[in-house]
Image (cartoon, rainbow, N blue to C red; front, side, top):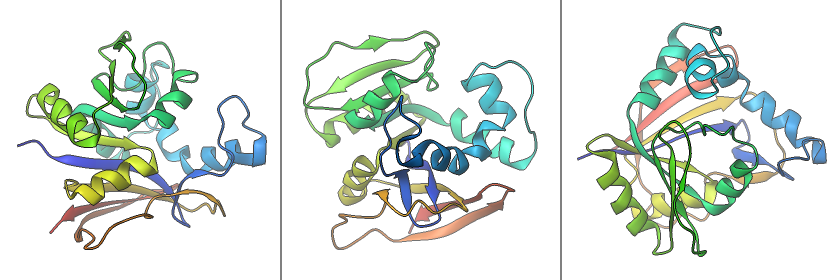
Length: 210
């Protein structure tokens, strides 16, 4: 069976997103600079620039780039929350950087939104379990990524279905925002460290469930 994994950037004080994060207003509470610092590592990678952002040739190669490539090549479907989708809908390029089916947890009714490059957003009103069922079917044996935001990841951690956590821990302090590890129910899942990769802008840690 395919694995369910989380792959995200995280601030040193445990936030996935800084306070005040609103697309189109990067100066508000300085969230744009904070976010940019946390995600600087991925913007520099060749794979991200060439295959996800479609910026043309160039970018860093090496172990971090190889890690990024292997992560995205394993994804058969993504799951995200409505807040993440709303922010991305106004900021992603026309060819959204997923290239898989994406299942959006929402209470709103909406027809699938097809984008160039293989990304189709499906809007699921029946809860996280149903979204995961659909994502597994669409993934065709490949893995399912829980893309975010924090509340969606927490829901899947509480369901006990997350097999791996891949976290890029950046040396930036947000001081507020959306924390990753909140609202978790007992017993919380147990993980062990499988791999640590040091980069100049982030430490990349993979945790696998025991």
